[in-house]
Length: 425
Image 1 (tube, rainbow, N blue to C red):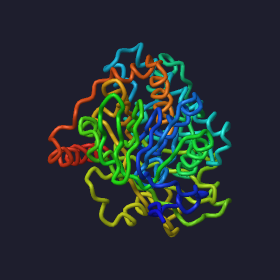
Image 2 (cartoon, one colour):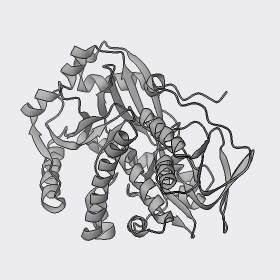
Image 3 (cartoon, helix red, strand yellow):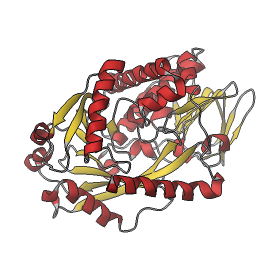
């Protein structure tokens, strides 16, 4: 019997996937993939449909990491601003990457439809400002995205937002009808079912302890090994010693989500009438949406140390009350967290090590749609068409300063400054 998923509303409400076998002995395939989250499973599905034999090796259960615990918000773009990509790559390739992110959203919807994945997809996402400087930045961003990226966004003033959102906390909204939200674990399990049906072999409860480079890379576990012509590292925040040169360029960051008790359909719809997802634009942001059983799912309170915040339940209740004072007496039924991986510049870190080991990481809290893009581009590169992945590989990525011992304390100190800025400016 395998270890259970960490307790969450997602785990409690998802239709379970039958347990997959532990990797024992030696197996071979054209491609061996570490990690059964969105990136690894999308790459596996794309490769299997192209005729490759594929093995996926997962340390826990399918979707056990960020793919099964995240906020569920699927947003066009990346974890960094477009101006960061312009600075790093120039305007033409920054525009190309943005267009790829639009493709990622289209393919996400298409994958859900084609494979019949029941994951509660809902259209619509709003970024909401709390302070005037944030409102000015969002308004300028709408003009920028329309003029330079041909991407239409709507500005809602406070009165228009109040028609959809029962909160007085925000000054308006930048509304994106092309983005949306879903049940993250059900989406991941749906990808796994599609991959299994396409012939992918998935091994669970099989932590990889070593990557052996060579003409045929090997993923070794305590009880077996998988050998392929190619390997894909899709462990993100959970690589844990497998590839130190990659791990130094991402940092695991804890993020937390609360699910209230069911509010009832009428009360839930009164909170968010159009069922959109919402996120503020603070550095330490809040994000929230409704569940299919009419709970409020409310996330935030990121932790940049390896420990959850003290009195996390009390912290989350206070944050919910700031947005929705009318929920002051509603209990929290579920509270969970997990790690996402951030890069130093918040840009995606995708590419290749040598000739036959591919990786994708650094989704920086923006991975629900872009992980699928990463999986597809890795599959394209393995099939001999690396042009699109090569654009991402051009993005320079520095390691986090401080080395293994000091990089986390330095990040905690930096994040304290950003939280102070959110509060005072």
